[in-house]
Image 1 (cartoon, rainbow, N blue to C red):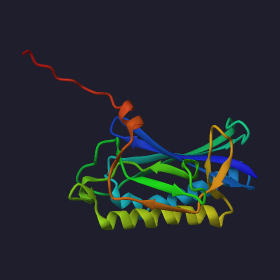
Image 2 (spheres, helix red, strand yellow):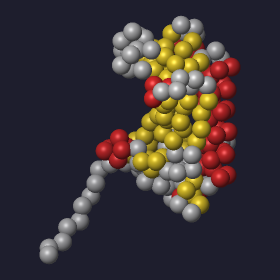
Image 3 (cartoon, rainbow, N blue to C red):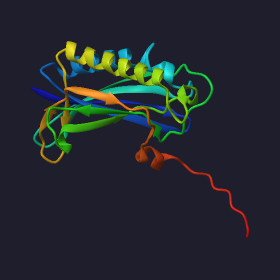
Length: 197
């Protein structure tokens, strides 16, 4: 079985975002990349894009084959795409993201993982949280993505970079509290305004 690292990445005015998922499968790298592209289309088009502001765009999908024993990349394929969000209004800040929590049958920290989605539109918020309708839509979109992968014999897994082992993902959940993705915050170029005392 081959280990693949799939990445979806995009832009937010002047900034960038990405999320990653690992899978195990016997397909070739080219086939795994096609399957990932199909899975992202199922996640995004007519689904997640309705929760994302138009200034946030998905621009690339890539798949890399990894050496399971080391975690190092062997080879990589990528495709450029142009898939903007379709929600109107404004976007939450780049570092504010809804988190998909991956779960496995392993009841330890190694049996859990996370995937941070791109920032949502402000219009999908309710009382400071993602609305119930938005959470339901996101769960359905992520399920559509994983259904494509599983249907194409790519098993979503958690990959331990320290132990170099994989654990099959058995379920996922999405909460309604917006999380802060600090790595995205680190990429923001800040403009400061000062004042004398």
